[in-house]
Image (tube, rainbow, N blue to C red; front, top):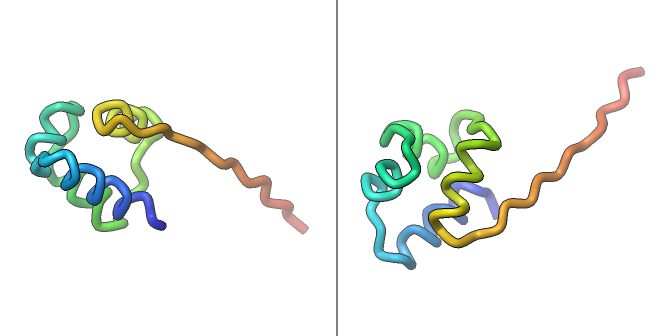
Length: 68
């Protein structure tokens, strides 16, 4: 599942609006809308703040890309 959808579903389950979550996490409303919409490239710091507020665990997978 895409991270934006996961954040949106969890936020809704907790009864928070996008504005609530944006204010609580210290990010702009437009930024949150972009994250939930699958646009943009949020920083690890931003995702960590959102995850903490939503009571979620953030797992980061780093892929090594081999150049040939």
